Each structure stands twice: as C-alpha cells, then as structure tokens.
Length: 399
Image (tube, rainbow, N blue to C red):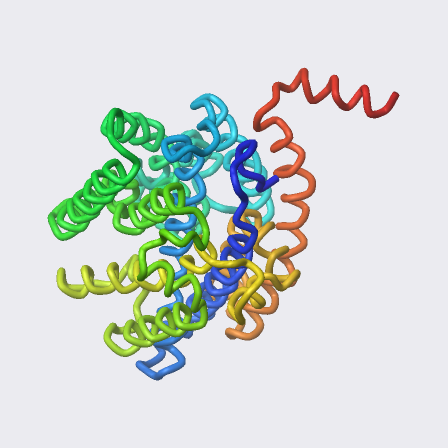
C-alpha cells in the first residue's frame, strides 16, 4: 500500500509521523468544533490551536516521499518511476476514497452543495479554486459546504501536477554536472522558489483563492520536503559524508524533537490562538508563523529521513504499532473526522470538547479502517500494474 516504487528505500517511521500529525489535527478540530476556540487566551486554548502546525508536517512529508524516487537515479540510485505510473498512483490514492467519503457524508449528514449543479466542483476537488460558499449551492453554510478540510487536498493536487514538470526541469539543470554541483544548484533553486512563495504570500494574492489553495502559496513547506529529498538521495542515511549539521541531528533525534517542541511553544506564546488559515495576521506575523511551523516540521522529520530507525526515544515512539497503524489509515481518518466533529459540535449536537473528541475518534476510526482495507489498499494494487494484470494474477493464485 505505502511501498515506494520498486528498489527505492522505504522510510518506515514516516507512518508514525503521520499518526502523530493525525492526532494533532483531530484534537485541534475537536477543540474548534466544540466552540472552545476563542474562549479566552488561556494556555490550553493557545496550545491546542497551535497544533495547526501539523499541516506543515503533512505537506513536507508528502513532498519528500514523492520527490525522492524521481531523483535518486542522479546519485546512482534506482530509476525514477514513469510519469504515467506516478499519475495513476496519485489518482488511485486520492480520488476513490474521497468520492466515497464525500458521497456518504452528504447523504448521512446533509452536506450542502455536493448534489447541486456545482457537483463537479466538489468531486473534482476544485471547490476552493472555484469558491461556492457564498452562492445558492451552499446557502451560506461554509462549514457544511463539501468537506471543509479538502483545501489541503487541493494544494496537494496542484503540487502533484507540477512535480513531474519540476523534476524534468531540475534533471535538465543537473545534466553534465557532478552530483555535488547538482546538489548545490537545486538547493539554491528551492530556496529561491520558497522565498518567492513567501513574498507572494505577503502580497494581495493572499486574498485570492486560486493562489492560496495551490502549491504556490505553500512552497516553503513543500520546498523543504524537496530539499530533504535531494539531500537524502545524495547522502543516504547516516553516511560518513553527511554534512555535520545533518549528521549531528540524525544522531540525536531527542535533540531534534526538543527543538521542535521549543519552536512550537514559541508559536504558542507569540501568536494569538486563532488558526493560521483564518487569522488576520500582519505580514510579519504571517511570515513568522509560516517559518516557525516549517522549522517544527523539519526537526520532526530529519531523524526519520537520515537517522537509524531503531535507535532513540523518538524512534521508539514512532515505531509504536498503534501509531503506525493510525498513520497507515490517516487518509481515511482525515476524510471522515471533520464532518463528524462538526455535527457533534457546533454543527448540531453542541457537545463539549471531550465528547466531540471521543465521539469523533470512536466513529471516524472504524470508517477510516474500512476506507483503507476496502478501498485504498485494494485499489493501490493497480499502482504499477494494469487491471488485467491484477485479474490474471488473482486467477493464478486461485488455481
């Protein structure tokens, strides 16, 4: 299911990171949907709301895991996957489970707009690029207009579309260069693109949905994932030639996580407890929280990418089986939990935080598991093989 392309290395603890991020997301969502958000500037309110930094982790990890197989061959690694295989895998990974969740949640919870004449906007995952919240399709119910959280999928889809093009461009830049020369050129390119993204974020484009909900507005987070992919492809894991800062960080995962925790508490103290997606931050505040959340994500992921997966307390935490399993089903959990939490909270039952959190987990986890075992995993058998090949293989196994 989550295996990389053939002969490429797997990063097993990445599922544990996804599991932690999934826990953080459901906690902050439950807090918001229970109406606790804005209840005051107490420490609890600040700490829970600032768990919105988990979004940066998902973006960074996605960029790393998708880009590394595309460039490993430049440093003597396995061949890159074909673009059509990449596109097929991304389609099978994202759309079928999303379509099922969107349809079922609309039928059961009465999401607005999905079965209107704007249905194609929701099923194509372009709702946030063609806003319909203020039209008759949604009757002003923005929090029940399709899947509220799907904006991150829209960002991911635009990134999937541009990534093979970006890989072709950087392959052209790497042609005729030594590995170290190509490494330096690409890291500079990523840094420039990340700075351009942040500069555009501080312009009037930040008010435009067609920009805000694409990779272009989040290239600092995605770009750091690309940078880690480049460094990983060149240096591998715990190589003697690994640059000293990375070698020290990989060998001291506890130090990395302590640094991530420190940056998290800076965001808790320095910013008002309003999710970054809706906060009216000044340009300086917006820039600062974006960079701090990027730092949190990098420090959490570095031990997973470069370190020994069997050493250190953070790695023992990430290797916890329930956490790994939660990371494995995290996509289905992401799809189901928001609408359920809204209905338990201010969207219907008006329950408190504990009830919303427990209720969401109890209901959404089985649905996420069903999504994984009945939809996602069976379909991902087609990621590198045609449907005919899978059927032929199934017939042979029954003979």
